[in-house]
Length: 166
Image (cartoon, rainbow, N blue to C red; front, side):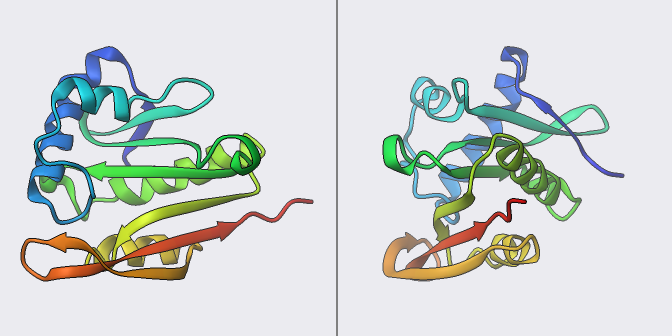
């Protein structure tokens, strides 16, 4: 079953917040403060236009979320970025792939020249492999810049995909 991707609504927040809490408290894949409050998390995760926040649904339930927009303002605003979180119980069921493809399609439609991920934890091998399958390349790794609870200091990959324009 392919996950449905749709824009985030305020009614989705409780499910999205539960996913964010689980992901950041695990301290394995995102360089966010595990003590981040709900208010700070919502302000950080819910993009304002022209950015976009979406959810992934399986069997009518929110199982993942993504946010996307410009990587930087001003002279860097032609490069998109995105972040993805999937509930632990839903991993391996296609939500991450569907969210990534949605973000890439959105960025192309918005006229971005490329998409860049600034901090992909190198031990998050499932995400790295997904992004590479979807056309991203590792263009650099900042060594020992993420404190993983099991592996100690590990690197953060910068990943990039250039879009071809007619």
